[in-house]
Length: 344
Image (cartoon, rainbow, N blue to C red; front, side):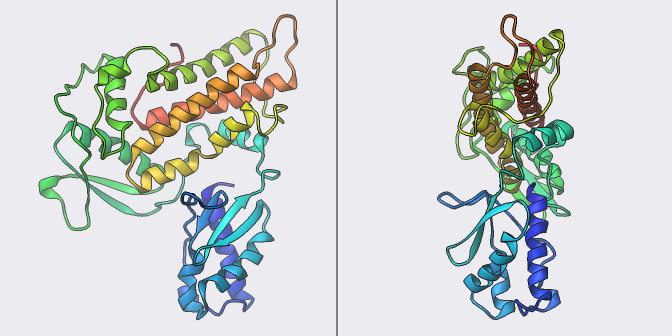
C-alpha cells in the first residue's frame, strides 16, 4: 500500500464515520486530502496521521475520542494490521505484511521502474524556491525540483533579488573554493554533485576529490557499485538461461533478504520527506543504506546457481529482489543528477 493509497483509505474511514453518524461533522469540514507521514522518532507503526486532531473541533469531541472512532474503521480495512492512538490523538498505522508482502513489493518495483516512489504528497501545490547565486545552492535546487515534481508539486525557481512573497529560500552552507569540472568528466561531475548533496544543508560539504576513489570508505562508490552489481547479476543470469521472477523469498524476514525488502519499502516515504523538507541529503543517505543492504544481501544469499546447480525458484526470486534494488538505486541517483553505471 503506497502512501497515496493509505491516505485515501484514511479519508474513506473518515467519510464512512461521518455518513454513519459516528462523527457529527459538517460536510465542508471533512478534509479533501489526508496527510500520512512516517512516524516521528520513537513513534509506532509505518505511518502516522493527525486527521483526528483536525476533526476534533468540528466534531466537538476530544481528539482521542475521534481517533478511537477512526481506529475501529481502519482496523476493518484490508492491508492494515494495527492502529495505535498516541499522544494527543495521532493515529499510527502498521501495514499488514501478509497483504503487502515481499513478492508484491518486488513485483511492484519492477513494474513501475523508476516511477516507483512517485507520489502525491504535494499534489497541485505551487512551490517557489529562492536560489542564491552560488554553486551548492544551485545544485541543491536542481535536485529539489525533481523531488518536488515527483510528489505532484509545481516547482518554480527564482533568484534572490526577484523573489516574491511566500517564496522559500534555499541557502545551504556554501561550497568554498570548489570549481565545476568539465561536463564530459563524468566521474568528477558525479563526485561534485554528491559532495554538495550528501551533507545536510547546515553542514559544510567535503572536498569532491574525496568521492572519486573506488574504495569501500567512499559512499558514492558503494552506491554506484551496488547498482552495477545488480546489473551484472542480471547479465550473468541471462547467460545462464534464466530471468527474474518475483516470488516468496526463502531467507526469512529477519535475514538479509528481509532487511533489503524493508529498505525498498521505505523508499516512497523517504522521497516524500525529502521533497517536503527540501532535503536531497535524505535521499542520498538512504541510497547509501540501500547500497549496503544490497551488498549484504548478495553476499549472504546466492543469487546465481553454484557449480552444477540448476536455477531454482529461490534464485529467480532473489534475482528479482536484486533487480528491484538496482531499479531504486538508479532512480535515486538520477534524481540527484548522478550517473548510475551498469559497469564499474
